[in-house]
Image (tube, rainbow, N blue to C red; front, top):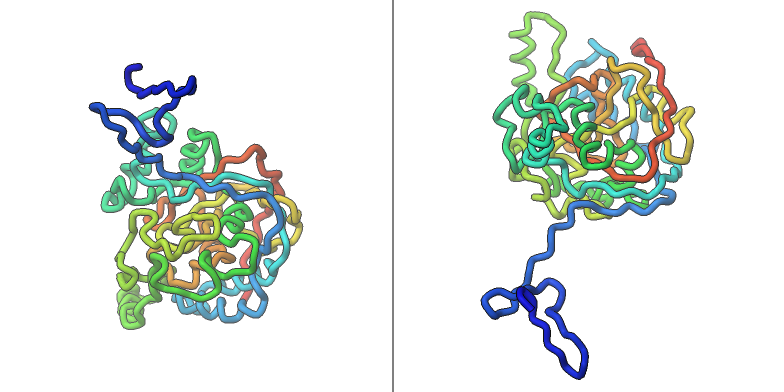
Amino acid sequence: MRGWLAIVVLGLAVTPAAGQARRSGRLERVAAPPVTRSWVAGGAFAMGTQLEDIDVLEAECERASNLGEQLPLCREWQIGLQRRPLRMVTVDGFWIDRSEVTVAEYRGCVHAGACPLGPLVAGDPRYVRDAWPQVNIERDEAGAYCAWRGGRLPTEAEWEKAARGGDFRTWPWGDLRGERDFNHGQHRVETIVELEDILASGQVPTRTLGDPDASDGYAILAPPGQFPGGDGPHGTHDQAGNAAEWVLDAWSIDGFEGLSESNPYRKPMNDVVGAMTRGGSWRDPPFLGRVDLPHYLSMLMVPQSRLNYVGFRCVITATEPTATPVAPVPLPTP
């Protein structure tokens, strides 16, 4: 029997063991394909931020954003976090990509005619490396890739359950902050900020992110999965750091108010501001790698943004999220 070895012993046909094939008269083991998705079982989990952490997080935001009192950015973020207290949420089961979608994977969608070319040509070309996460991508472009694969972007609740599991952990790997366990940035160097203030000649500063930090082994992006110590409870890579990731939900200063405790999802009412990312990135200070935090720039983010620190991963599920729309909320006065 060509290509297979069949031996009849006492009337039973014996074929090679799984994972083996015949070549040149020998049995050879065939490597199993890599596992690309993780199953996250449906059920309840703790979602949100512990209230006793919020003052410290606002101080981290103020240190990171370098905006001082010129824009009440961190104040709105703090109010939003206060309205996102730790609570039990239930989601249906779903499959989620173990890794952030890479440039090579996205390129395959472009070649198939299902995804726009923009992310490969419109951003900084230094980040277009096949092995790296696909960044410089708009949220709808990321959604088009997920749809091509039969899925969609995760809701915020799905993303957090995959990163957090069924306990109250703060980081994907547990409760202790391990800055060598993920690819992150650092707070801006104060002397550089002061110099930029002088050069800006009194204009409102736009320096709202951190600086790269090579102490974790990578100055900027890394190929997915380079930090196994940072894997989450479901085997996902880089849900802390590397590229921040688009989710479907909109940011709202209302937090969880008005959202169901079953499959919560806050749909944007417009495409202007309030697009949300999760997980922090290679240029964000480490605190944004926590499993419970939307980015403090979410209220300023637009879904059409092309940013060298924002990528995505996909989920595949039998259900579509039921939307709770969010109305635009003005910034609070300081």
